[in-house]
Amino acid sequence: MELFAISQDGGEETKQEEMKGQREDEGEFQTFHSDSGVRKKHTPFTMCAGESSSVLTKFLADGMLGRLARWLRLLGYDTVFQTNRSKEKLVQLAIEENRVFLTRDRKFTQREWPFSVVYVFSENPGEQLKQVVVEMKLDPLSRRFSLCSLCNVPVQNVERERIVDSVPRDVWKREKSFWECPRCRRIYWKGGHWRRMEERLAVLGLCKIE
Image (tube, rainbow, N blue to C red; front, top):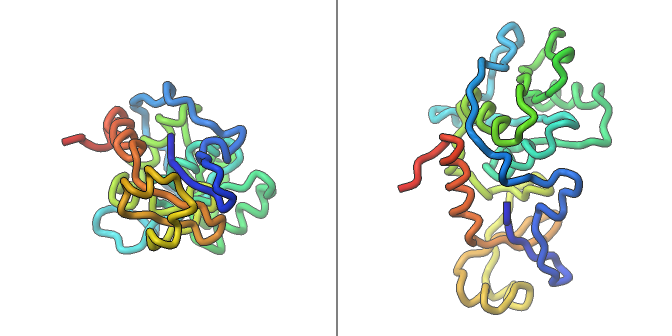
């Protein structure tokens, strides 16, 4: 995924480079079919992000799902992914913040928890994404790129004049809208990645390109 950002020192980066060890092989994205991975005996979903929901589902992904976490952030869904936290601390966070726990650990799903748990079947990031989007009834388009995929916080509109010296000149002349992460201060703009995301989601059967 080529999500452009400019750091404060003016160096052009991509989030793919920032998320070391969790780079996505674009060739891995393909469609899949499987049974539901939601543990039905667990607490029913209280924050389902379907079309009729006004409250977005929040997720927590365990250490095996870094690529999925990043994709969910790109789609605009608050997703915690921290490899430096113990499973016990992740469980506590899921309880405190009412997060859906995404995991590849089958044994974890066999226990009773006071929050919803989704067992993610595949090791393939594309299949993982489709499973979660379909089962949780997420909207994959309307909130895309609303979060910083590195910091997991909402990006904010920024005046063009304020960042004229912070982005490539040709980009500043071409683009009319820019966003900034309030935490890491990276600057975003719409580029070819916007269309490429639509194409990848279409390949997964998650949207139609008109």
